[in-house]
Length: 281
Ligand SMILES: O=C(O)CCC(=O)C(=O)O
Image (cartoon, rainbow, N blue to C red; front, side, top):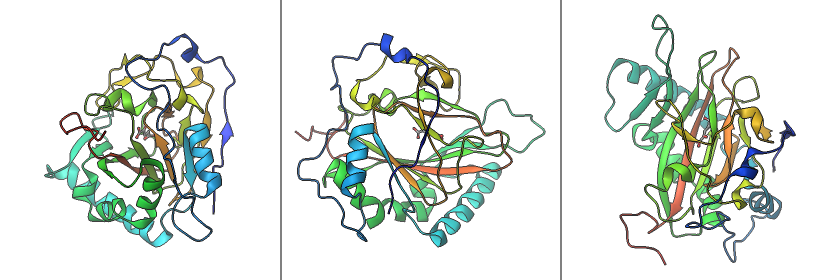
């Protein structure tokens, strides 16, 4: 069983000190669910140590959420889907391609929204006990899949992801920052191919002002480059998943290696939190 393995990067002062939280939203998200039951050894879900890590730092890594066989099958499905999207429009998929690639090179998907509908295995994983037992512990049992996205960083061509909080995007659709994201890694990730980086504890410092960026995918974020925040890099192996809340500040570097970094994010939320739905409470 597992918890977070991580290495700290820079120790520079955080520019977040100069940003003000928006008073319309809570300072801390997501808040612990009263009565959440930790998993016992051998059960699906987060152990007591992992749950404590999630609420203390804003994220937690679950080693080997899915086994090698399912991850190999997912890798194949993603490659087939990538080829199909390069050939034709795939109904149900919204694709953002890597910007500014040499036109002589093949197009590279950066994000594909709707992955749970165009890839049946991703849909199945989003409903699996491995995934939902964790989501129930951190959101409660009244929850739903908010969205599912392929998050790709192609070898040599995958671009960096600026520091951002997911709720900077999701506040347009949702009343409160109650979501939890699960980023499932199909390939191993490290600094060279763009592993995820987190600003520990930033889930308790409110929503930050939005900085607009020129990109077809991540066009909202925080001002400042990846070295401007003290962060934790989270190397992962295939099948590992990182669970994190909608406020925690995160980003990732470009893929400068010859190894692809394929991943899928599954974002869940409380039922009734949508701005077009009646409020849950
Ligand atoms: O692909 C990445 O490295 C970043 C993913 C991310 O930031 C997100 O899903 O919110």
